[in-house]
Length: 431
Ligand code: DLL
Image (cartoon, rainbow, N blue to C red; front, side, top):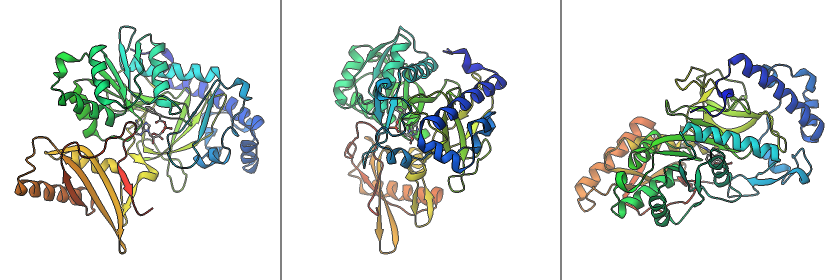
């Protein structure tokens, strides 16, 4: 089901629309924020120099630090009397990055979220169980308003209280689950602990999962555990919140709503634009935002773009699932590794679960990587020989696949602390 026919626009129509919107955005930030005026003047760029969407490469980048430097509302282009909502990014250290919305921004957010729900086939006949956290984090309210816009019944359960959530999902007949993938797995664990029969006790048929990097293995496990279609959603508060892109039922690639958010991929080191298909850092320009328009925002997320047609009929550019964040990349004795690559190797190993934690420490001059992993319920922890064999075989797989040495510790099922929102996978004690 396609929510808005713009999602199937011709390339030419889309480029024309993007050009008009980019020009308006540049004019807006140039006249209303001294920050962008100074940046554009320094590059000798005036709004009149922006005429096609390809002119976007003339524009400066915006970084998270720029938002922090103007904390809390310094980059807003409207008076506070026009700001109807404030959210912030989910970082836990330092000052958060604060974002604001006018009513028109809220309407766009609802619109793109309705497109997301339509991708997951959601209608007024659905019951959406929303376990994303409500509050300053954009997940809860973003997923809430989109579900309301398509007319579904929303259960605003927020995060935490896992056992209770599972009970409510069953009793209220939820058909669509919205949560982080790690929390969905956590809820599946909790449901199976109670001896639930997933097929008969629950009515779930689809899930909208995102907000954290997730390996193919974990996605498969969530989809299989609940017996549902897995739709991945991507987004970030600086651009709108959830609803920048989402995967339809035909592939794992995520359609970017590029009539509102213009994507580019750059080499994170040189800042040079990379061609379609190559992995690099995702940069996004908001094309319609009023309260906080943002030029070429460096998301820090590593992905690639593809323009091959999709069977669903949507023509908008697609991104692959985020491989990791540029700043989550672990450099272990000179080798670059993303946590999702470790997760992938775990998912390929029988007897291990996707509940794990990576701990990095400095031992002398060398980095030491410890991986703590819970074994599956069917692994006999009291068979020392079998456990040692499993441990060694996994250590070899890590070395063969990722070219790093790791010390692996296998632990009992359900012994690693679960997080309510985004999973905490890495503890870097070198920092
Ligand atoms: O996490 C918005 C969101 C809420 C997206 C609910 C999806 C569902 P922030 O708290 O600002 O916003 O964090 C944004 O989360 O730059 C990525 O690093 C990460 N992220 C979001 N979606 C995905 C995803 C929300 N599907 C940051 N895969 C982004 C991987 C994701 N990482």
